[in-house]
Image 1: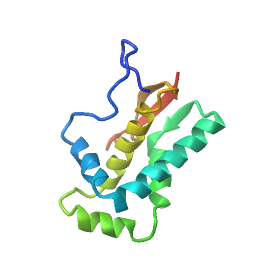
Image 2: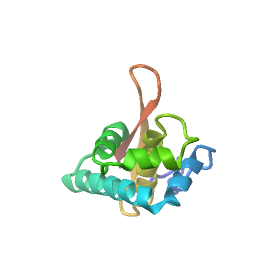
Image 3: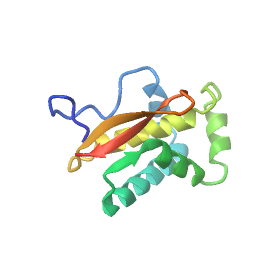
Length: 127
C-alpha cells in the first residue's frame, strides 16, 4: 500500500493521461504478462530480502533487460504511436501499481532527480 498524507491508501492507478498507456498494454496479454510477472518477481525478491528502499529505475532497467527476445519489437509494432522510451515509463507505472496493491506492505514515495534532469526516479521507502 502507498498511503496518502492522511494514511489512506492511494489508488493503484493514476488519473493523469499518461496512465492510459499502462491500461493499453494491460489489454494485450502477450506483452503485459511478461512485464507484470517480471516486475512482480523483482519486487518479491527485494521485499523478501528485506530491502527498505526500492529504486524504480534500477528495477525497471533490470526488468526490461530480462524480457523475452522479440518483446520490444512486438511492443513497438503494437504501440506505434507511443513515444520512444514509453516502455520505461510503463514499467515505472506498473511498479507503482503493484506496490500500491500490496495490502501488507506500506511504502512512501520519494523522488530522486535524474543527473541529466530528464526525469525523476521514483524511490519507494518501506514504512
